[in-house]
Structures are given as C-alpha cells and as structure tokens.
Image (cartoon, rainbow over all chains, first blue to last red; front, top):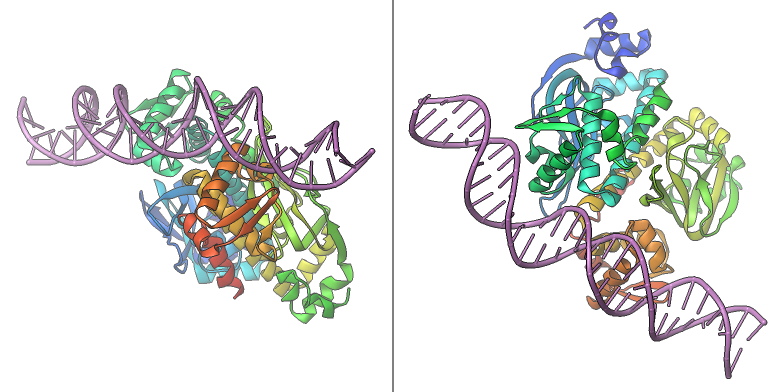
Length: 236
Length: 236
DNA sequence: GCCGCAGTGTTCGCAAACGTACAGACGTTC
DNA sequence: GAACGTCTGTACGTTTGCGAACACTGCGGC
C-alpha cells in the first residue's frame, strides 16, 4: 500500500497521518478482512498485530476469571486502532478484543508497529492521544454500567455503533447486544421496544434502524457524549 | 528534595526511578499535604499539578452532565501518580480527581512534568506503563459495575484501599463508600454487615478493619485481581 | 452532664433486572 | 412446501437495589 493511498483510508488515524508517518507505516500495512467474531487480541497472550479498523466494529471485553461472566468495556471502529497495551509499552492485557460487526481494515505486526512508534514522535503522540480518548470511553462505560438502566445503556451503545458505521441500519441481534451490555437477552428485547415506542428506532429481525438520533441522545440521560467530545477536542 | 531521598519515597514510582530520572524530577518536586476532599484535578480544566501520592488515596470520578450522578472509576495511591491525561499528551479530561483518604505526597507543575517526560525516555516509558495499569483498573471497574452486586464491589474496594494504605484499619464512612460505589448509603450498611457476619471485616463507627484478606478476595467473586496482577507483571 | 450532629441501623413500598422457560415468527435449506 | 434453526416476544416468580423516611448511638463541645 502506497503512502498516498493512506490518506484515503476510511480509518481516521491512518487518513490523517503526516506524510512522513504514512511512509513509515505504509510498507508494513496489510489489508485484511475482519469477519464477525474474529479475534484481534486474546487476554494474557502476546499481541501479534495492530488493527486499523476501516469498516466494522471491534469490542474490548473483560471477563471474570472466576466464572464466565463478561462485558464489553470499549468499542473501536474507524476512528481508532486496537492494541492499547502496545501503545503504552507492554505486549498484552487481560482483555479480549474481537470483531462485533464484520468489516475490514489494515493491520501491521506488533514489531513493526513498535519500530514505527519509536521512530516518529508525531506518530507516537498521535497514538497516545487515541489512548487518552479510549481510556475516557472506558471510564464512561464504568459510569454507565454503574448508574444507568438498560434502556439508557442500550441507547448509548446504539449511538456509539452509529458513529462508527456508515448508515442508519445496524445488523445486530438481541443476543449479541445482551452480551455486550452484560444483561439478559429479554432485557434487551424490552429496552428495544421502549426505544421503538418512542419513535427513536425501528427494530426488525437482526436489524436495528436509527430513526431519531437526537432523541436517542436524550434517551441516554447524559451517559453519552463525553468520550465523543474528547475525541473532537484532541483531534479537532 | 535531593534525588537520593526520592528512593526512600513511599511512592513506588518515585522510589524506583533511575538515578538520572530522579535528578531530573527532584528539583521540581514539592512536598504537599493532601487533606480529605482536596481537589487534584477538575474536569475540563487544565491540569496544574501532577501528584505523586505517598500516603492516602485519591479517586478519579466521572460525573453526569445531565444530572448530578457520579461514580468512582479509578483509585490512585502510593503505587501511582495522577494526571493520566498529561502522560498521554493532553492537558485535561472530563473527570474529577480528589483525595478520598487524607495523606500527603510530592507534586510537580504540569510544565515541569512535561519537560521531564520529554527529556527522558525511561521516565516516559515508566509513566506509560502506569497509564496501562490504570486503564486496566478502569476497565475492571466497568466490569464490576456491570456484573457484580454491591457486596462484591464493596469487598473489591476495601481490598484496593487496603493495598494502598498501610495497616488494616481504614477510616471510612458508609456515606463515602456509597458515593464511591455509586449506590445507596443503606446498601453499604447492609453489605458491610454481610462481610462482617462472614468474619472478613469488623466495622465500627467511621472505621473498617480488615480481618481476613484472603476471605475478602473470595468474596469478590473474581472481580478483584486483574489490575493488581498487571501491576506486578509490568513493574515486577 | 447535656446538647447537637455526624454516622449508623432499620424500615417501608416500589422499580429494575434476574434466571428460566416456552411459544411464535422468520427465513433458509432441502 | 416442509423442516429446521435462529431470532424474538412474553410470561412466570425471585432477587437486588432504589428512594425516602425515621430512630438510635457514639462522641465532641460547651
């Protein structure tokens, strides 16, 4: 992939690199399909590749060591990149990362990624700012999980997916949403119905359509927005 | 403060600096008392100082913009340092940080901190690893808030406080714990009683005494440990 | 020794979410 | 067009936690 093409990438980080940084990364980037459920990182295992998502959605998921309970702590789409631990100087984390909505992107090996970061301050600084934004998102997830009811958290999740995927139609099953939010599947069915009754979405089998984005933001009761504002602030 | 004295600091990051890094920071460090409720960072305001906590406990708290709801997303004690945003290259965040248990520490101005980070790769790398550990802790908080009941989360919080404060006696009121966990005050009273009935703690007016640390870890049902393991792994 | 207040224990009814189960609806496959 | 698997709607009873209120209890100050 030539550096010139990077500026056309759907991935915001890639598309806004300085030309020097683009030249640094481009020779090592490899286009890759990202099917549903593809594992991008496994907990406590060395991270092999860093993924710049162009289409689709990846989830960072925390899991209990005691039992099988798990919950999503962060989502990554075309606005970011996986492998937060690598950016911060270590090679693994206790979390899993996998594709939640199928798509594609560019990937680079961990070694080449590390070399590129070491070679360019502007690249590293840019990636650190992304780390900041993601950590704010994780903190907001902690807030939402502790203080909001299912309906609010569902609205927040739909908005975050909407931000990262082109179009108003999201191919999602109740079951998958339940896993992401860490709640019962019928709880999702009920919450979707409430949002639908308010005219904010239309839910069909395996498909949620966003009708009223502004209304959804209100439905979140203040639990949506902080990480998004932070992203705009630091990246402009 | 001379560099030599830093190696005796109760703050783990300060005490383990290379001698070169200690010389870099020491001239700018200023000892400071950290009374209860002292604000270390305010949301959306420029961070003025970076605090290396030596005794006591600081909380990072997220707050809803809509209403007044708030919840703790991370705790920082003698094992770390405040100002995650500065480490990651920005000057503010949407969170508040303040002292939750009174103590003391060393502080340095944001400007001097930035200069020191720019001047020393080893210092910056060390701080980035701390950022990784804190982000894992925040993710674990998201997990706990979403999947655990009050009793489990309370046990986790007590263990985290125990890790960071010398001694088994923690001066804490139910009210304060309720704010940290984002739950009702009587919910804390009840949960403390349950832990006390199991012989894990003794609760007196404004004082919680840890009796059976191992038992408390079990009482967490798997929600304690990941960030702590990560801290040991990256810092040894 | 009394007052006053912060801190704690306990209660009520109610809302939210749980685990489980089962029936219907859709859509693909044969 | 029948069969099957997936997805969705709905229904139990139960648990957890909420909001609000009120009484009690240490403990320091006067």
